[in-house]
Length: 313
Image (cartoon, rainbow, N blue to C red; front, side):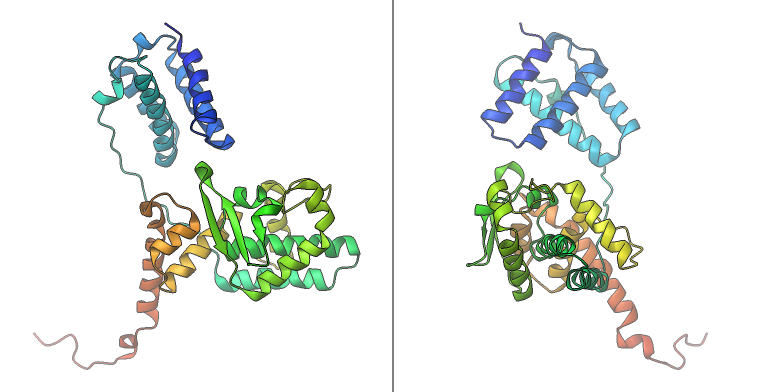
């Protein structure tokens, strides 16, 4: 019987070459499963019991937030299903466990639309009044990055991995490869966004052609997510914006703004590339918070002065 580390290596190869999972998912699986093997000190399948699994899950709850615990448990369960499928296991010990816990709802952090407008205004200001050709080109690329993030709601990983052939500015659509190698096509609906992307393409055509990626850094290589984070920090400081803005907040703001504009949640699910409507429904909580604010501050009843409203006893 092969030891667990050997089976784990087989499993990761299976995930990579047969299930075709992306590199980041494989990396997360490797980290989670290696942690499980090291902390439980198990080498053989016969040593695995429901009690050992329960103790490990308790230790996870003591060290991580519920969302992280949920992900790690999902990684381990998937590994055990593989061992069951390959008949390494006669009985899956997870079948004897009842794993249910409440995961607190953490509302997505969004950017006020006025702040995005201020942020973009500062970027365009830096572009139009750049002191050198080098600064002007960098500002042009930076604007294209942020405009595309907000216009499409794509993930930062999707933007940085975007290839030249996936961008069709003639038809104004972007082909995005999301999690699990799922494809989705997003239309660019705004003329200004399309115009700046065309300007960027014209100016960076040589670098894009050589690199193959749509967004390139100063050295001609693919733009990294760390570079985008530094970019956002830079323009936030220039615009005197105190809010800590992350790339993912543009995605949250994209989704929440559409929901508040009465766009059907299933369209938003498709545009975000969510596999389940349950994931997209987190934005309904944000919309409800907005609804509460509207009804509290703008409903005409707040201005009524009704005499004797407390009544007499």
